[in-house]
Length: 410
Image (cartoon, rainbow, N blue to C red):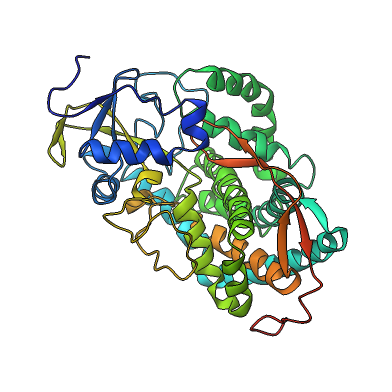
């Protein structure tokens, strides 16, 4: 494909180690270069300005998900797994499958979840503060999410750590065929049998989300095969991005103790605090869309059948949308951030992720007076997902009794 004449052509590599660890300086450069830009090495377009990212995400007819949300065109290439029938599908199929999720994640179901999440969060936090020193990623975020989310889905208790492997494989596979992609494919071969067995009807606990998805197959809303695919989609919807955001949240509070003190003084800020973390740290750097026809992104013409990388992380730090976008402020009005996407393909599990995070942050607020690092944080590099591999911390509870939080502990 020849290089475009009406937009900037860049040699920035959005899949390099440096970019993946800290994409924000390069995204600022790309935002400033024009409405859209072209990656010479990969032959794809990109967009990072908030207004244009939001417009692309909301125009599923022009910027389609059906060819996959990764670098490869799933309509032309054989993928390592069947495409997601909720994230990588457009209407009318998407309308049907999204409807199944919407019915299951009812307000009443979410209320019940919050009670269970709160109990598990308090038990875990109580045990960790007694240790004083622990790793936020392994001991807190992963341990908590791998307990509460699979329980809700109705997954077996054994081998839940495989969910982390599967999530890493899934997000790495959305990139080009680089070393991370190849390593992911090696892991995929080992993890696929477990995923298929775990998503089978007989493996799921009655009453969980997974069993409810199969009930939709019993009524004819989806096929039995599609029900299994929807359960598989749930595996990544409530695990990896939530673990990532929780890790980043604690790192932010270590770096900004004034914000932790503010949250302890007013625990009702837990939701806005979590959304501010998702905005400023953007666990998902971005997804691809594929043009169904010649399209315009601002002043740039993009040909039909082109891949466009839509940078959620770029939109979330756009100074045209956010005042002082690099500042962490848990009181910020975060409506409109693209950390969960936007439009009909916005994250189907975002309310579950919020409920998980709110329960854990609330438990921490009531038990942790202050944080300090117990060692350097380590990034977990992935073609699509920003996350920490490790974050050792030491917690102090001695000032909890002296400075009680603004709401009584339940």
